[in-house]
Image 1 (spheres, rainbow, N blue to C red):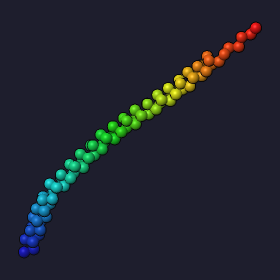
Image 2: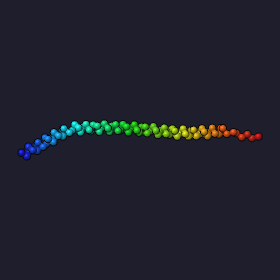
Image 3: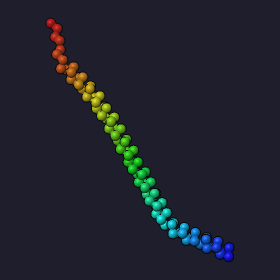
Image 4: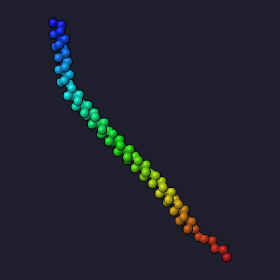
Length: 84
């Protein structure tokens, strides 16, 4: 009798485990998909951050060029002193 109860218990555990398993697989697949999407989006964010950094560097470079051009323009607009 004792062995029969153990056998029934084992069979019931196996049955319930198999019933729950498809849902667990589905959840695991969703988790894997979400991780892949997260990795993809993180790589896109890194790419965009790199582009932003490059653009900021270009902006700073252009600001320096504008300063230089303004300085040259101011110097060229100064009236020259004529010595007599």
